[in-house]
Image 1 (cartoon, rainbow, N blue to C red):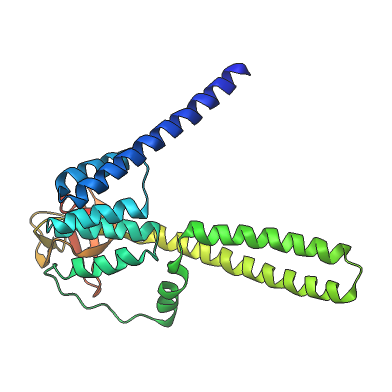
Image 2: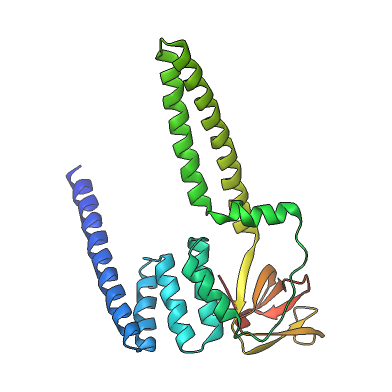
Length: 251
């Protein structure tokens, strides 16, 4: 028993020490960024990422550092990673739009259905974890309100507690649906950024395959499948093809 307590305490203090170290590195990296030493700032930010202390702010700062160095693909990649953690990170949304102006490929999106537009505008505005947290809170409130309804002596209060508990159950069901929908979307849509300055997209996962189109660094694609060192991708206009795995990086 004593050994377990010592182990738990050592792990706890280890986490605190690592957290302090990450915060110190983050402060140093921010200072280097302010002084225009972007390469050194990137090194420190990446050190923090290796320690698994990731956040939207960390990826946002990485994106900014690469943007200052005019490196298209890494800047877009890290802005996208920031938005994967926090889809409503306005600074990342704004700077991503500027970074995309440096890309060469001009690809028109396919028309979206009502459900796709609703998903992007509502369901994907929050992460799976955020929707799940709301669902937990709603379930807790529904339980409390039902107990208050059950033990209340006033008919007016009973009516109020009953109606509000029904409403919170409705919120619970909706947020659970949104959470699982978002989870499925995240699992299904494997997105990536092209890192090669220029790459050929083939009609088959072989070097001898015919080129169907070409892409340039910074373009975002969806990964559909993979075979050996090739990955099948789809771009925004619906075109598909095979690309060398080394030419892109999954978000």
